[in-house]
Every structure is written in C-alpha cells, then in structure tokens.
Figure (cartoon, rainbow, N blue to C red):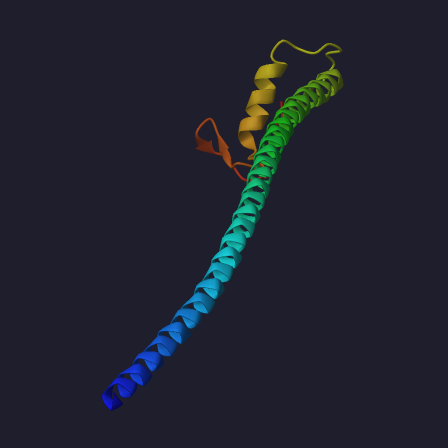
Length: 151
C-alpha cells in the first residue's frame, strides 16, 4: 500500500497541474477573444475612416475637375476677348490711317480720300516694322538716307 499512496499523490499532482493549465488556457482564450473583438472593431473603424477619406478624395477630385473646366472656359473667353480687341484695334488703325491719308491728300489739294489710299497705307506699313521703326527697305531695295517719300 505504500507504493499506492505515492501513485495517488502523483496522480493528484497531475490532476492539479492539468487543472491549472486548463485554467490558464481558458484565461488566455478569454484574452484572445477580447483582443480579437478589439482588433475587429479597430478594423471596422479603419474601414469607416477609409470610406470617409475615399469620399473626401472623390469630392476633391470633382471640385478640381470643375475648377479646371471653369479656368479653361475663362481662358477661352479671355482669348476670344483678346481676339475681339485685336480686331477692333486693327479696325481703329485702319480708320486712323484713312484719316491721316485723307488729311495728307487734302494738304496736296485733293479734298477726298483717293482710291489709292489703301495701297499707300500698305506701302507705309511695309516700310515700318512692328515697333514703328523704319524698315530701311522699299520695294526690296534699301531706302536712300535722307530720302523719305510719304505718299
């Protein structure tokens, strides 16, 4: 019977160890379930934030596209206005040159604008570059220094 009591105490010890391990495993399992729930909630929160940011990015992209379209439209309008102003300026320049030639013709004894005024205007325009400086060329030949023929 002596050996039987030793076996019983080892058996009792083993049951206590198994029970302790089981208790520890249950505690660990409970902690893991809690961590899993926490991680699952964190994942849900992160997904919500991502959806919100995605919506914000899409909203900003639409606003940027709208802004680009608006600026493109404004640029086109400005270009049309510039072209219109350029045409008006050219028309005014034509009228001014017509008046200048009319006055010049009147000074030479001709009270009316001659039919060759437009040709004279073209001739004067060819003599000057865009800056108003003398082009130093007349009919493809250099203009003589000191010689200025203004029709």
